[in-house]
Length: 318
Image 1 (cartoon, helix red, strand yellow):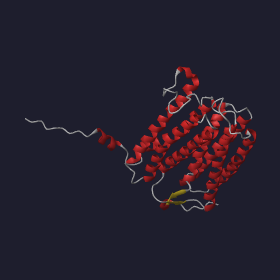
Image 2: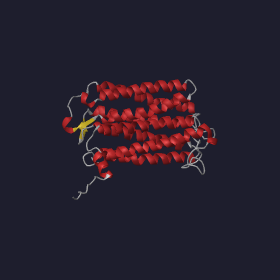
Image 3: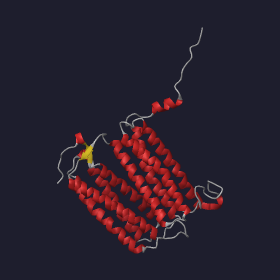
Image 4: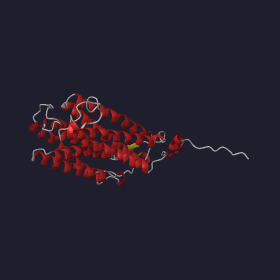
């Protein structure tokens, strides 16, 4: 009696079959994870700078000449800096999983495919910029570029989250022109506020290392300059919140403009508190994280002023 040979599905084929072909909980969860880790790395990066650990690993890509890991002689600063470098691998892992979770739906959801690919390629570029900050002894403009690269990654991640929930297909304006224009102007002032904030930080006392240079701008004056676009952003946001009350509920603009306003109120409170208490590192770090949360919230508002053409509800605003 002969035994019939058995066939087994190759592991790679089983893995491929396991990957999603439609938006499911795995895709939604990984999109949110992408946004969370991009915001989180800003907090840990801020901790590196604010504790003076920016040169805890004095070179890059190695931590110290001859070693890719920190050594006991480097102390707590080496631990903090090396720990932040390790988190890059978490970002890479999340980016790879996000890409894999949408790769089988690349024809139907090309938007998710290209967004996840862009984020995945951007993460190592961000790590390279971080390395350049070390190699330039924490040049304040390079450090600022490193932070701004995270701002862009957070914005891309917020777009990814919004698109995961969106109905695929052509999109059209779902709000009146004045509301869309106000949204775009508000986004411009959010961007301006963040950029000026980066310059403020580059002029302040938290250089990342006691020997690092500052950008030479007057820190006290720059704090006032920073507040101007911030308050304009706040005023424009109030207009957006009021206008959102008359938008179709399906757009969820009431939710996202409300979140935007809440973040701004908290950001303003923390900004005033830190400015009047000598810039304690805890408050400065919270302020840095809130800045990218603000960008994410503003991105969510931008993403929800359009809708799938056939489902747009023609409800006037104003």
